[in-house]
Image 1 (tube, helix red, strand yellow):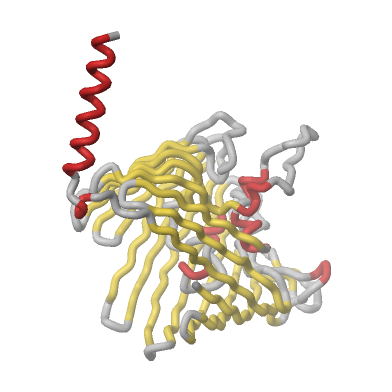
Image 2: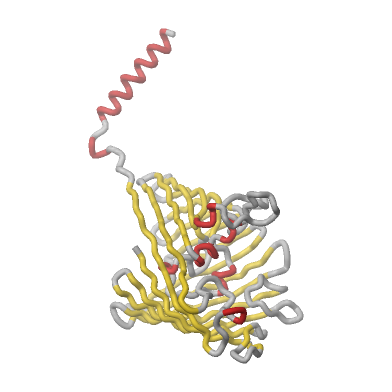
Amino acid sequence: MKNLFTLAMLFSVFMTFAQDSIPEAEEAPKKKFSLSGSGDVYYRTNIGAPNGGENHQSPNTSFANQNGFAIGMANVILAYEGKKVGAVADLVFGPRGTDAVFGSLQWDIDGDGAPDLGNSSQVVNQLYVYWNVSDKVTLTLGNFNTFLGYEVISPTGNFNYSTSYMFSYGPFSHAGLKMDWAINDDWSFMAAVMNDNDYTSYNPTNNFTLGAQVGYKGTYLNFLYGPQFQVDLTTGFDITDSFYLGLNSTYYADNNSDASFYGVAIYPQLQTSESFVLGFRAEYFGEGDGGVGAIGGYDDDGNATAFEFTLTGNYAIGDLMIIPEFRIDTTSEDTFYNDDLEPTGSLASFLVAAVYKF
């Protein structure tokens, strides 16, 4: 007891001395709370093809698929961040948000064998905590958006308002643990262990996926290995002060079946004034052995291809972006139909979106 009392007294004196000896300049920095997000709405119509009702059709890609006046999503991002640790909650509401978190809806709460769409996970786009282990290494645990692909879920992070086939059928989000390592000013590396793609609330399959990314001066080579395999390349270059060229290429294979897809897209963008940028997306996309349902029509061997061309303008008015967009999809099989309800291999559409970022 005497020894314990002596140790307690010494510890108390040490702590008092240590606290008194810390200079005011070295006190732990205060944590910072931030609130950000966006809201997006749009008008869309098909050209030479039916709109509305049971005959309505759209490109078989994610988001911006409704006709007439429609809403995208409201996005609210809450962050409480310090120098060493922090947490981020990214919440989404609306059709675009619901489509983005589809994997989170697989929780069968009532035990009837079907997903329960009313569970609270359907509004959580991202939820993670992080620890800056050093100036170069960060650990992240939780649900975070995918590191693959050129495009992202939030319309504020994309130039085009509609999305590509490659982005729509790759993963949207992951749940797991990842390590980001900024090796130097040019090179970076990321490694992760995660659930199956898009299972972000929990792990219903008890399978795990490994992820990796190697970055060099804005060029990223991405890998997934598990029940699904994917290798993906994204890059971009400022050709001149006003002309930018982006590139995305990917290959995906389901290790539980022979289904696969592959594609490549270029993203040239020309800034014509301080407030207006004109851009183009040209994408070639193919599916093999029945594919993943992206194109919707296949030959006798289960193969199909699609070309997608999207001309997009970005007109900035402060924090508001006006986005007019003209898109043409052509497929190797007749997956669309025209105003006369005759099968055809092409569909043209036009939309105008408004995206506000705060």
